Image 1 (cartoon, rainbow over the protein chains, first blue to last red):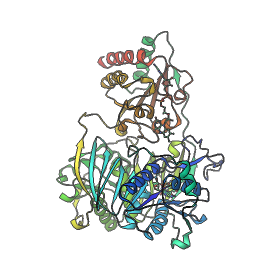
Image 2 (cartoon, each protein chain N blue to C red; image 1 turned 135 degrees about the horizontal axis):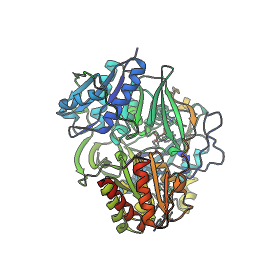
Image 3 (cartoon, rainbow over the protein chains, first blue to last red; image 1 turned 45 degrees about the vertical axis):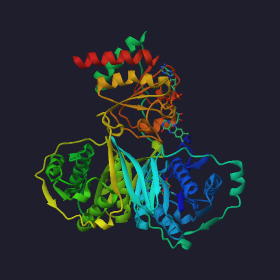
Image 4 (tube, rainbow over the protein chains, first blue to last red; image 1 turned 60 degrees about the vertical axis):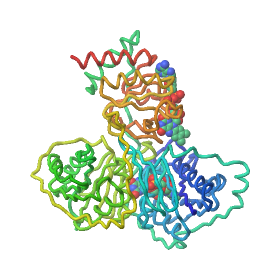
Length: 256
Length: 326
Ligand SMILES: Cc1cc2nc3c(=O)[nH]c(=O)nc-3n(C[C@H](O)[C@H](O)[C@H](O)COP(=O)(O)OP(=O)(O)OC[C@H]3O[C@@H](n4cnc5c(N)ncnc54)[C@H](O)[C@@H]3O)c2cc1C
Ligand SMILES: Cc1cc2nc3c(=O)[nH]c(=O)nc-3n(C[C@H](O)[C@H](O)[C@H](O)COP(=O)(O)OP(=O)(O)OC[C@H]3O[C@@H](n4cnc5c(N)ncnc54)[C@H](O)[C@@H]3O)c2cc1C
């Protein structure tokens, strides 16, 4: 089975995000970069399917030179080869453009299942997996917590508001991973050593035949609205504090 | 030229979902500023009867496709039908819910319509005749104003953030053929397992009582359930509580859990780690109950109680019961 895992490099979840004074972007200095947490679930599932059915896992990542580290991490976890899409032309690319580049890279290699994260925790757009599926003309199974493959048929579980769906689809398809799918492994020391020798291709926009046509643009970045300092409720004992809280919620906030 | 503000209404089992009214009300506001019409797309089987409900919130025209292949929801069938009616009518703005279904559908439509979308928006407006969408990024650590240069300009709206405003119109219903070829439909819903608790999902809840590691164990949640019953809330949890196995994964609020926007979020025994705040900081009112006065949650809370939650929560439940009985 040929499996592709798309991985994006994102700021660590602990990172403090500062908007540049002119609102043109965020200040990237001092940011620690990690693999998007949802992509770890996708990659882990890809590795498990390979262990079960044999075949190959290719990781694909679009981004600047530093993204190479994330691809190496994926190779150290057990992926077989990497494709790095790297071109300054993709700076500020929207979901559509990103998916176009990923689709061009993936169309050129055998693929039965493509894993993406359900969303990237930086831009939080959650579009790339679906746009990729549309561009490749294959079905998508998004935000899934369980994957079961049998021949050319795939069954997944997708939790929705107040219910869970069991959905069946056909391969090839795109699956987007949600927390709960599995417990991602760590890269082992021998894995890290082996990763250094694994094939890693770099491609630019011209090599992929992709032209950049940004349709959604962030015109201005703004810091989050500040929350005014709250009230600490005084009182001698839990009973008075609770009564005062209830009163404030009713009379001041008018929520209950 | 593209014209009209369109929404994709969402129904489940023949009942219109609340997000549909949020979308309709928001679309009405935008359309009034542009002097345009509001149209809705409604898909499903046996749903024509509920189309009229949308007119109460300002929809002029509802495009309905009533077809067995559209029930239950699948990406294939819905995205195909919507792309068809959108291409035929060329709206300038298309709004969907950033619900689980809406996220799945809207992203596929971005591919089909080759357009741009601002996802999970907390505000949308018309500035100098142009559509601008505001959305949280980096888990709410910053916001972006998104402009879209292709049509339709798509945006998905975060549930529970946009007000529902009544604005009755003499709406009309237009039936359309979704143009589905069953051979093209590659996914199928085999089974729907309903949660029978009857509780509102966290992403749509108006009130949330949430507990973290400070709850000490699964039993601790009984006192939160008690408070939730009195005020009509849904119970949530921090990742620490979920990872400890005290609560199911579906209860997790945060960056890798659910993003919630209730009117009231009561955080009990939750320290307020940056990843937790990411999921709940767009709540209208935040209450924190924590015995550590230095817990970061207090920097976000509108009301804070520094004390043992096991003593405060039962008292709060009683106090609320009394107030609500008055
Ligand atoms: C702060 C900010 C806000 C933005 N807001 C919008 C917006 O509202 N609408 C819009 O269209 N564009 C927006 N953009 C453009 C944004 O860069 C693209 O959306 C982005 O390229 C892809 O979206 P995402 O990172 O949110 O990925 P998602 O769609 O959230 O990612 C889902 C999955 O796709 C895969 N994937 C995504 N990117 C890559 C990659 N580079 N390499 C490999 N795999 C990848 C991963 O598996 C990932 O888990 C924004 C950009 C910035 C910087
Ligand atoms: C990649 C990544 C993603 C993450 N995603 C999420 C996420 O989506 N959601 C999330 O919540 N976390 C997430 N986390 C975890 C996060 O960093 C914190 O570890 C977690 O939120 C802590 O949970 P907590 O506040 O319940 O526990 P703690 O930080 O241990 O806090 C417990 C609090 O309870 C208080 N307390 C204890 N006993 C009592 C008592 N009797 N009365 C009153 N107060 C009491 C303590 O003072 C303390 O403040 C993520 C972490 C990573 C690395």
